Length: 336
Image (cartoon, rainbow, N blue to C red):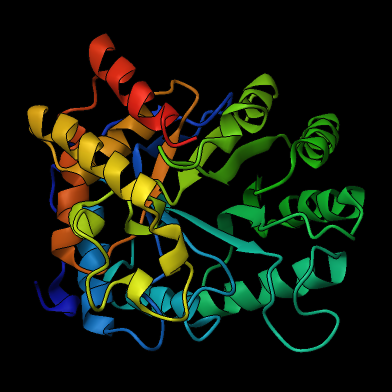
């Protein structure tokens, strides 16, 4: 790609991506957002990371999803992203939506990993310093920690907006009971919850029961992470667990035990439908998540420009025939 000092975004980038209003707000997000959970840390190639951000922006991806603990090491994804912005995107800040979050373990001691006011206020200041930003477009409570009163967390998020450190606020992975309290408090304070972020894929549909309808009820947008089920909804595991894959590693979020025969068989059958549609399994899995009109955007991860380019091909075929949806339902229902 271009030398970083000479990088010029392509002129037609906004014609390459559909955008959608986030809940009942005036903010539009790209249908596909780029997540920096993996592959942007201090252990990864900075050059590859830079190329992926440039490629994303050139293809209309304006939304970049961070958290204070993304790396590894924790914090390094934000630091690297800040450096990429500084070296390549001066003058383009107002064309980007940059999100971060706090609430998971980040530093030692009792204040480094919960949803307290102490943690959130320290975290956003640290994240702003690492990225070199004056504000985040969206700042999330990364989780309900099971201890901190939701009221304390939400009051802190509202104060973060009032202090100018974030334009909008969101919640991630909140159970329905706590989510409702958060939505109510935010609405009453005149700082509504812009967006709710949850795990959602063909293989993990728990949010359909309560979380997705609840977000829609309160006018919150909805964004899905892990839409490919950590790679299970790609062609990677159709013939077992390959060496070097996430499931082959002893550490990590995808364990061998999750690659069950039932899921592998379901993936094979889904892959056949995708093939008939002229798509890869991954492309179809992303399109399937986006088919719900309540879904604002889907977060994809990538380890290379090619992988990101493959994910973007999803946009070429987003529609499903009713028979396809019924066939997919039958396959997924057999897994339960």
